[in-house]
Amino acid sequence: MLQDFLNTKPLYYDKIDYTRMPRVYKQIQHHFANPQVIHIIGTNGKGTTGRFLATALVSAGFTVGHYTSPHILEFNERIWLNGTNTSLEILENAHQKLLQILTHDQANALSYFEYTTLLAMFIYKDVEYVVLEAGLGGEYDATAVFDNILTLITPIATDHEAFLGNSIEEIVTTKVNAVKKVAILATQTNDIVNTRAEAIVKEKKSLFFHADSFLTKNARQKIARIEKELALEKYLLTNLSLAISALEYLQIEYASQSFQGARLFGRLSKIDENIIVDVGHNVLAASAIENALRGRKFTLVYNSYKDKNYKEILTILKPIIQKVEIIAVNDSRIEEEAILEETLSHLAVKYGKFNGIHKAEQYLVFGSFSVVEAFLKAYNE
Picture (cartoon, rainbow, N blue to C red):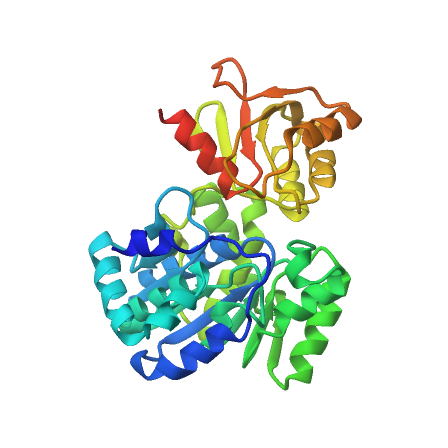
């Protein structure tokens, strides 16, 4: 069974063998087809950008796969096919066939994300377009082994420094080195990203575009209509604009209805009258959320991994925080509660333990996919 097989693999690794995925894929790539792959890299908004684009491509009549990660509750959230999450039957059949292609040693050696990526691309072998979201990386990411026709670069900021680099320049370099033929760069908050990304792409002799260069007057009018008709929050417009720039580059027609149902769950999703959940987990996401919810006050249901800059994240969110309720998350990477409490005390933010929802309070659940997962499991009990 697929789930039993995946359970043998840790979700996260302290060290990663970056040579493994290219080596394995080179040996088995003749079993895979060559759909038109659109690779999405960056720090924030990859999933939302990808879902906007994939939904519009399906609406235009193409067969489409959208690979995203991680999942919140169910594994099949990662492998979307022609408008819906892939069925468990399709997943299991593909898993059994993939195990016949791989040697025993290869299957066991591949990481959780590497195997999942191969599984998705095996399922997508007969589609016309694959919207392929990178994991935390860029040039060394498992998704980078596949040829592509276009790379979309979402906003880039500091995150996952242990794997990507300690400076914004290093992080941009690691991510943008994944570009193969053509790159479109989203609007950025840091000018260093613009200059470094453009330099890297041109060094590779690939084509480079800013997303704005595709946003003609007509395209901007369409975006305004889509925003109004779909009631999109302002923070989603950068993602929508990047997806539309890809459609413009590919010369594929779109309209407001092309994006119906494109919202990914977990991105400022309102699950009840007084509860908003968001899987963001870094400084850039915190800034977008504070801007979107400015003027309101929330009980923040929160926790953080040790390697996240949670002090800066909480400082950014402080204007919209009434108090913080720390939710228990069963993960060895989660920060010690006493250290998190010390940070909250230093920031003069009221805090306590999460022990349930009260109808009179407004809640924002934020911190990571793991935080949202832990909250939803408790909420749905």
